[in-house]
Length: 360
Ligand code: SP5
Ligand code: ZN
Image (cartoon, rainbow, N blue to C red; front, side, top):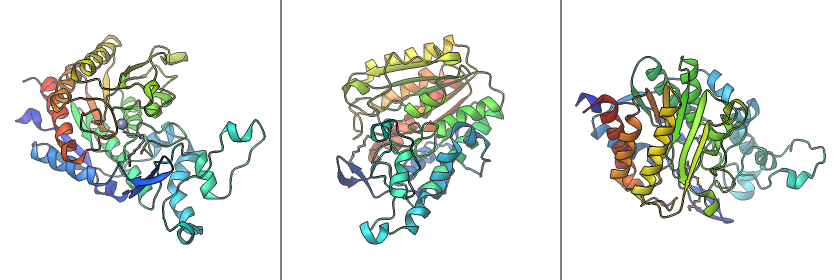
């Protein structure tokens, strides 16, 4: 089945980030975004007959375009700064977690300095308590970007569809802040790389259960990269809580280039696929030349991180709808946390996308 043979760009280094816990409601709980995700997805895609391609190291230029230099240098050095401090002796852990967030709520308009202690400085970049930075985090997050850039390079070279097994995920990372189990924005890197490869207008279609606040923010004032997302309504109490509403439509040159479709908790295939069709129609109407799909499969019914009730067949149909746009596409892995079904959901989406893109 030649039409099923999608290049799967992955890297063993993405396993180097393996958080054993997160801080949730002030207590320690098991980590959600674990390294085993890579292996279960890899196994399902290999079994489905796709072609595994190991990512090589990509240059920094695209990353430096989408992220502030200070976030990159924090991410590169934070675990070493933590290791050089007293934390291992004091609290017995090797992962960076801010204990305060130097927001305007704290400084109230005063002139501010940078905190010297990493446990305070981390709050300048990290915006939640579930996203710990450990010794392998930089290597893994950077390797995930290599996967995204590798897949984008294949599509730029003429491949109609490529999948990037990015992990940790990326769509919650803004220009200068990280959170939501994400450290570097893989999908934004893919979109920027497609632009640099000659694509005139790129659409990012984000079907993760959560609004991709990072990707949305990075491109909010740009018209050349559009961002459309279907996600559980943040107003119903779901991450990212404060953004992702339907009235966020972009600014300046990006006016009209953002499209958010929030759904009520409990929405199943019918309502979710209607939203996916509206996103596809919106992309088709905008004269886009290339696509990035932020493929979170955490909208699935059995996923612990969202109240949406999408099925495996629903993901297959979403693939057919989005693949039916007929645009060259980079599919970037985002969330999806139920290990027993994770790989099958990803495979179902890709099969749908490949069949619609290449014809039956
Ligand atoms: C990429 C992505 O899907 N990020 C999801 C971020 C949503 N996180 C919300 C809070 C996580 C709470 N996890 C509690 C599970 C107990 N360990
Ligand atoms: Zn998600």
